[in-house]
Amino acid sequence: MRTCGRVCSLAALAAIALGFAGQCVAADAPPEGSELARKIATVFEQAKQSVVAVEYVVELSGPRGQQRLTGATMGVVASKSGLVMIPGTALQVSPMNPAFGLVSVDAGKFTWIKVISGTGAKFDASFIGRDEDVNLAFIQVAAGQEFNVPPLAFQHPSLRAGEEVLLVSLLPRKYGYEKKFLLTRINAVVDKPTRLYSAENLPLDFIGSPALTLNGAAVGIVGRDMISVGGSGGLEEFAPNLMILPTSAFWRFILNPPVKKAPKGWLGIEMQALEPDVAEAMGLPQGAKGIIVSRVFKGMGFPAEKAGLQAEDVITHLDDKPVDVDKPADVAVFRKMVRDAGPRTDVAL
Image: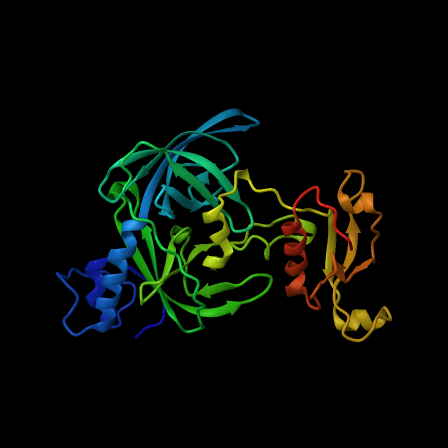
């Protein structure tokens, strides 16, 4: 069977079972005897009930004054009370060019939100907040409505490279928000600074999609890891690549959703990894790990300046916790430690 990503509807299950990728062919039902097709059909039919469309109107303030945007995104129902997760970058600055200018959902003020179930029923909802590290936002269906969309029960199993997962998303409004799926394969597991799964051929229109094993376990959400792609000192860059965030990355927000924009800690420095050859040149003990302060932002009152940090300072611990960084790829470990400490929090370096 081909290992590339495959996006189809139930009508294409026969093609998938035969190993054809990228084709959707008419079929009344999966061929008898196709175990893979039956698994996909079962998982897809169950999971798609918890995937909804979310339409919105939002007002943005900018150099040209107020801008009123209308749009739609997908959502995943996460609790019986009507908590819905949506992508944190759902708003299009330029509706005429959807590929350009996605901004965070907390950049403006929502004036209207509707959650649309698979039956077409519409429900009023309100914006709660967004966490910028996992790049997920949360809305709440208003009380007093007969909202009976079943929540997706996320689980916490670990995935392995080579394992197949099913993603569920939506077609555009002109197709009635019909559900679609993509069958893809985990091709890498990242453990620092937090666990992430890389998968083959994740298209942009699957941002916010739930990821499920072929046994039906919901194990994550397609999104962006904003900590690892951030610039030095926390100045974030918007990376085009998508990853699968495991349940552990956002579970705490299902239990306690962020209000407005979840605050994060910030030092105000540029930094680099304390690599072994650099540590040796600086006369540090063998095996020393940490980060080197390469620049302190001055004149803006950031914590690093107030604390007297200087360029070439080496930070090996934060609140007695070792900074396990000895290569550039691990700088995000320290960034996460600082951000998780929260704003206006005293830390010992």
